[in-house]
Image 1 (tube, rainbow over the protein chains, first blue to last red):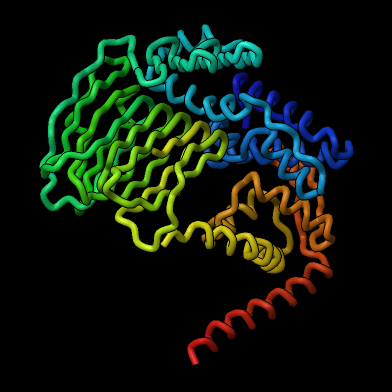
Image 2 (image 1 turned 90 degrees about the horizontal axis):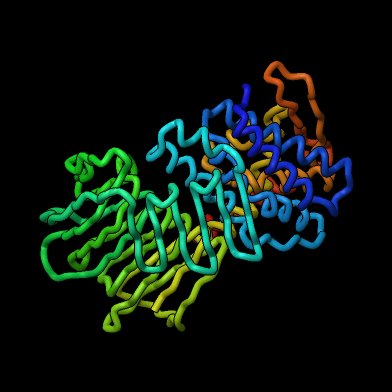
Length: 318
Length: 109
């Protein structure tokens, strides 16, 4: 299957970095590894139709892949480049942004340079600035300013649509929330309703909010992965219901929840503030990044089970 | 109880065994095929983990490899085959597995 120019460039960069990372392995073995990985990526794309970003993302960064080969040979793993994870994880975001937001013209104009990393200044620009990260200023800009995330704030270039209201949770046992970009904050309120207060945005300026909520069996799902480019949402939930949250990029904030929680975030940070009168079993996993956890007692019985996962970024539990 | 830690420990020991069994059942398979078949059987292994593992089994002489460069699809493939030593190792793993299963059953007595 013929790859388009963008994918070919991306693949070439990936393989070049893999080769560099495998330097300490003999030339013949090294070229066999690269040839096998290259065939894997190309055939996986053509067989399954998955975009190259996804296939590469599933493999891992060139440094991660190389390290596994190095370690099982008893060789020293190489240092992961500081922004290595972001380059590849966010390449996937770039696709979402492009598909969700930008016209084909915008895309063509910004084809090159694909990737621009300035380690000294702590800046990364991907796809000509469609994804712009300033590590020093703690700023993430997606879609050339369409979504700006800075610490606690998320702001949008376009006028955001208000999506506010409440759902009666009679007969509901669990809530699921799924989204791609933005910030979500959850706190707990004694009532029988889910209250939500959101600002949503996408390039079309129109979102059919009636399609966002679905109820099946006793699970209420709020799915913002399709028409919503970015969001800043505040949810208040009653105690007891199980909560499941999925966000690709941005920030998740949980305050004094009284429920079991399963939260997954690809890039960004999760903050979890415990209710001091309750006990939690917390599982916090960060693939690349760090965690800040208080001393958690290994209790036999606890009130709530909490599982937090971040691929790239950080988790903080208070 | 949180099972994921136990499961991942268990899985680590199990994947090699499954891989050897898979290659015993088939004349030869290449990377993507191995990945697909393992996943179909419910044995999760990451793509980034499979290739280094195959590489190690080759270096331990449990597997043999064969490159096929000319493919209709144009993607060169590295095929893996179980070796004689691999077959013996598999036989020992299988009896180990069976005695483990028996031990668990014996607990019930």
